[in-house]
Length: 476
Ligand code: NCD
Image 1 (cartoon, helix red, strand yellow):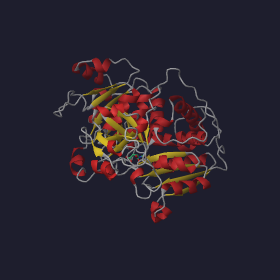
Image 2 (cartoon, helix red, strand yellow):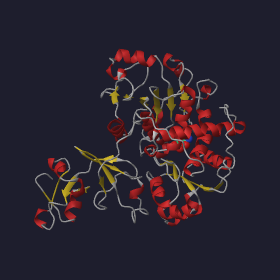
Image 3 (cartoon, protein in one colour):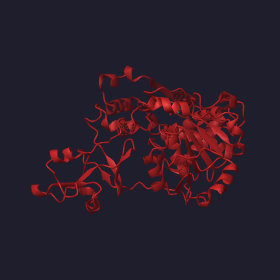
Image 4 (cartoon, rainbow, N blue to C red):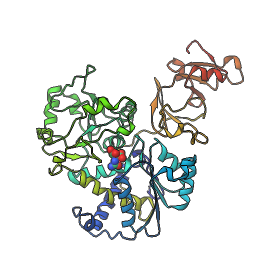
């Protein structure tokens, strides 16, 4: 598969082999740029200057950014390409009520590639669907941030040579951190074990956990009991995801051995800041008081002896400045790798070079073949920051969901990937032409499994069903 002309919206868009191909080109890019970035030299002459000459990258950042925007722009300049940019939605016609699909069509006719950051979850998918040129998601609300994940993985690979079988701890805001959400799936793809260490109240959303376990295999061992007490003492752990590719030793172990296993070392500690800008009302006060700090004292633990301390940055108070001088600190290096990684990605998506993709025969493929629900009426995504429910976008966007489970009936929005359990269903087949049998049923009734996916009608509420002429059945 070529990468030319493709978009990168979520980590699902890249196979392991394609990610490896991006990394090997990034090695060449790093070698070529290493004088300017002062990155460690990786050998060879990349000779990449001018490879994207004549190409234009549009950089559309509708949320604050330092690293992502500037490293993308620096990457394009280093490749000899040009950049046009917008850093404020108020300075564009979005402020006049223009939809992002119209904006995408326009920008796609001016530029060869678009990089977009937007507060609406799923916004990058809409832009990718309409632009007609490759689109890179540089962060869509709390959903995903795949290029940050690429440079996170690249950093781990450079330091540890592999990702498979490593123990990677995710720390801080696992609820709203989009870098975390992309990283979880990438780590699972490459066979790492994930240690979840959320700040209480900022646990990984259930839809992400469900997708991880259902599609990536593996096991999730919950450590924190329902009474909130932790079962380990050496590490404030909530849960562990055990990759299906490594022996399931950890999951089988009694608590005591888990302690021993943890003391044997955590390979990377990925720290994140509280994503205050996405907190719901009333969430902030309590959480900020309890946000733990990673400092020298904390890192004294035996399990952190060889740990890579990572952070997507910016940091606020969760990572002490005293750690900067420690050889385990990776975050500035990590940010610097953003340039060669993004250079490689831009080159391949623009088709300026062909990727040499070698897929391992055993490479893991997540499940994606779910039936789709897109009747275009009745049920809507309950996520208030989903692109599909914004006033400017509902005029043309049809809500669309993957039916990811039947018991209980669970839909996943194709835009923001928010999962939810709708309340009522009906069948388009059973009532055909006969008004008296237009009945709706509770989504938890056994009838759900009998209705063929293509005949399924789903409602958010009973009144919605009744407005459309359906009457309650015994199972409503
Ligand atoms: C992250 C982001 O924007 O999601 N920053 C980045 O791109 N390096 C993390 C954050 O803002 O906390």
